[in-house]
Image (cartoon, rainbow, N blue to C red; front, side, top):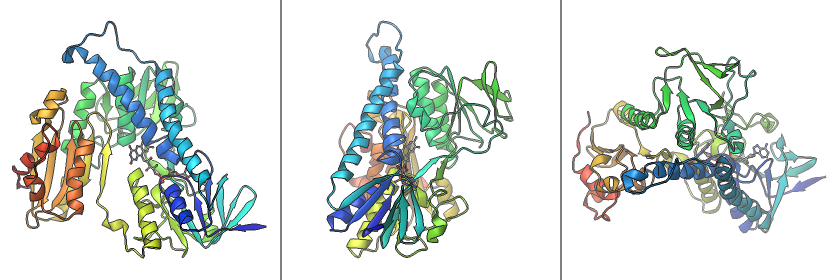
Amino acid sequence: MSQHFDAIIIGTGQAGPPLAARLAAAGMAVAIIERHKFGGTCVNTGCIPTKTLIASAYAAHVARRGAEYGFVINGDVRVDMKRIKARKDEVSGLSNKGVEEWLRGLKNCTVFQGHARFHSPRTVVVNDEILQADKIFINVGGRASVPAIPGIHDVPFLTNSSMMDVDFLPEHLVIVGGSYVGLEFGQMYRRFGSEVTIVEMGPRLIGREDEDVSEAVREILEIEGIRIRPNAKCISLAKLDSGIGVGIECDEGPPEVIGTHVLLALGRTPNTNDLDLDRAGVVTDQRGYIIVNDQLQTNVPGIWALGDCNGRGAFTHTSYNDYEIVADNLFNSGHRRVSDRIQTYALFTDPPLGRCGLTDAEIRKSGRAALAAKHPMSRVGRAVEKGETHGFIKISVDAETKHILGAAIFGTGGDEVIHVLLDVMYAKAPYTVVQHAMHIHPTVAEFLPTVLSKLEPFA
Ligand SMILES: Cc1cc2nc3c(=O)[nH]c(=O)nc-3n(C[C@H](O)[C@H](O)[C@H](O)COP(=O)(O)OP(=O)(O)OC[C@H]3O[C@@H](n4cnc5c(N)ncnc54)[C@H](O)[C@@H]3O)c2cc1C
């Protein structure tokens, strides 16, 4: 016996739950399926727990700098990892519980717990139940990639998921992968008190960013005592008497790092290999990302893919924006498109990096005439007052239209201040709107007009 619904949603990440609520509120009979923890990656193993842990690490860091601010701590600042984990579990747990209770409390919505697989383009099987609907929305997210590194099966390794269970201080954490996840965990564990080495295959950290941004991030991590090993050509793992050996064969330095624990932070893999997508006829690219059009429809009419699994974004905000696009197009006959959104994200190191729009490299490639300005955080009053002067603000604008093309704010408050520029970009207004606006003193944002008054032809 099959059960009929108007819509089936697979996965309760950042797009599925709000979509379930919207469809159910419109009177549609909705089935939503979750195989593991409600709320998915962001809630359980991603943004929320990591930012909670980063807050603990920041507090410890500031406490160690007490003398600079004029207070005394009698003795060393040491962390209690069990309490740090308990705080993280509480914050993340509240969110996980909130999503589950929300979904279970929705009128017209039935929650199924189990692994969903397609049986046909209109049929999904979960446990022994057969569900049918004319509309199916896939929001299955992704997981940490575990590439076939030599020795991978011989040593225990951590991922962002298993890091959530760590309630002790690793003596020496070797992080393989120098991008967002690796850097956030790296700084956090260094501040907790671990020795940290970050191994990166590319020539520099966060390789998609401009070189000056990469370099500034590397500098602040090294100041805190994190060892960075770029150009790691051939990574391998081996169990040694003294710990875990990570073979790196870099151009410089010893060919091996020996740590007590290894965290793999080598990107994400979409959870699409065990959905039986072929039974529905839904196609993916070579890396397993579901191919979608600008409205997030797959090649099969009536099936959409939202969030990380469609490869059109890798953030909570992109997944939530996917939900908004799909819902608006369904209910408001909207014409919202993925290609209308402006790239934006943050790296939550301390200081954070807020980014929007194009990088310098992308602007150069586009060949357009641009103006740019850069301003050090050491000359931003608020940063000086807070004793957090690392980093810089840089902004590029189109020389003809005066539209903002891109910005990087690597400095205290950068994750928030970037929105001033982002919203002006969405408004398609010229940068002079920001330049002539009166901002609050003393803030980092009040310096944006100053930066914009220093624009010069793009180098
Ligand atoms: C360590 C880390 C830190 C991050 N920090 C940030 C950050 O600060 N800001 C930010 O914007 N983004 C961050 N991200 C990225 C962010 O977490 C993801 O982009 C976001 O969670 C994507 O959500 P989603 O909707 O695609 O699906 P997910 O949140 O991945 O959820 C998918 C859900 O589908 C379920 N599922 C999968 N397959 C099936 C199946 N066959 N049947 C039933 N259920 C299934 C899964 O169990 C999961 O619950 C971070 C990621 C990591 C790993």
